[in-house]
Length: 363
Ligand SMILES: C[S@@+](CC[C@H](N)C(=O)[O-])C[C@H]1O[C@@H](n2cnc3c(N)ncnc32)[C@H](O)[C@@H]1O
Ligand code: SF4
Ligand code: SF4
Image (cartoon, rainbow, N blue to C red):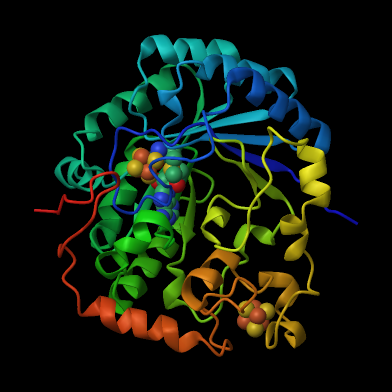
């Protein structure tokens, strides 16, 4: 039986004023105009009818869509919980009021660092103060706040300061997400991968903070997966609970699935969300365990991690159906070990490529 999706990630646009070198998203989309308000309204209604409860409004920068409050209204009208996933840049008092009036439930704001200078450098833009202002507006308008900080070799040593900074901003939840190596992050992988010592220290810092802040602020720590010996249960399984619609209307099992070369995804302009979710050959391709190769096929972990990430398998081995090479049981694990060796010999500020600005280097 086809599982029921419970969360939709709506990538409203790939436009963004920031230039994060770890950004997992492309800077532009192909396949025509961004979906219109009417098209998104249809997508939200079809998602709710399919059983989706939670909507992430993301990008790029979702605040770049002038019609964002109308999009929130459309989602609330069909009963979706709405979470705005934003850099905070572009939120002013007017927009905060409009979003609150539209029924927005919560806001996740990302920071690059606790330190303004480092934050601005990593964002490739003077964004830190605008983010602080956005946090204040979220509180002033009574919206639930969570924070996200992407962690990598350039900021991982500041984890204690980042956690203290986050605490001072009073979010309900703090997500410390080690970089996932897709998109721009893949281009900057050598500079962004933390060392093993950095990762071990950071894990202890995160665990202590989780214990100390229990009941006050949820601290979620996403491990740096190249440094693990088992993969993540990516998306809790392909086509199981999550779906993404990108700015051009392609429907994907995860935001990065567009990077898998031999998969062409269906578009919401050509079919209903239900027919794509239930019948798409691409959604069905990696559902369940039938598709799995050895060693996953006979492994007791196969219903726990689902063989890891299909995008990562495709990127690193050329085969989307391979065992995620992060797994120590994968015959391709040596690919990851070679990447780590090479990265640890690269200087962190050596030729960092910023999103949308291939010439810029960190200096
Ligand atoms: C693609 S961004 C779009 C929303 C908004 N522009 C922002 O950055 O908050 C969505 C979320 O993914 C995070 N993110 C981006 N690239 C990432 C990566 N390579 N690994 C882990 N998280 C990433 C961002 O920090 C943000 O919380
Ligand atoms: S991660 Fe950075 S560059 Fe990417 S969309 Fe978000 S703010 Fe923009
Ligand atoms: S062999 Fe496959 S199922 Fe087993 S732990 Fe590794 S990735 Fe997971």
